[in-house]
Image 1 (cartoon, rainbow, N blue to C red):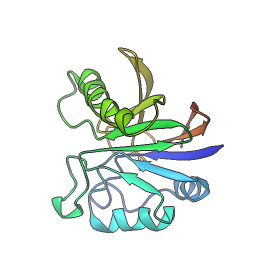
Image 2 (image 1 turned 135 degrees about the horizontal axis):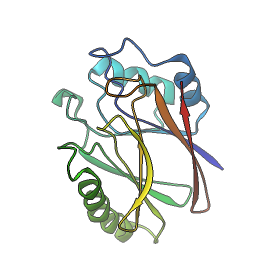
Image 3 (image 1 turned 30 degrees about the vertical axis):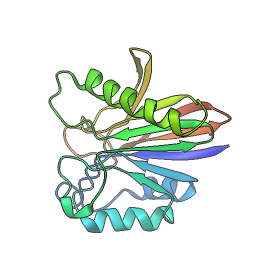
Length: 173
């Protein structure tokens, strides 16, 4: 079984000084980490890369400097599941359908590269935890790993992935 730490919206240093220790520990214990954008700085990206020993898929958020050179969308196959990661930048209205469309567009591309596997969309931006199906696509949003407003608490997800199946746990403080 593969443990995947899923985080987003760290906003370091604009809204927080560092990741909470309990999130740092869960990232270090995970086999892989996904970050759905809004690091806010090169230092934040580097510190998370160090925690993951490079086992990281990350995308750009709307507050990330272009100098980070992160993609807008990334796909990663882990444990027989294809994760399509995007920040979800844009207005609240239409968020779910916008992210679902990005996942669909990029999962078709991923399916061409490998054998068909379940596809899960991972996004951030809203700072609100989400694990729901939208038009047949499972979408995950880990909220904000530092509890940056409008979040009330620091949150993250840990996905257990094995042979194409996924179970997800929400962790918060």
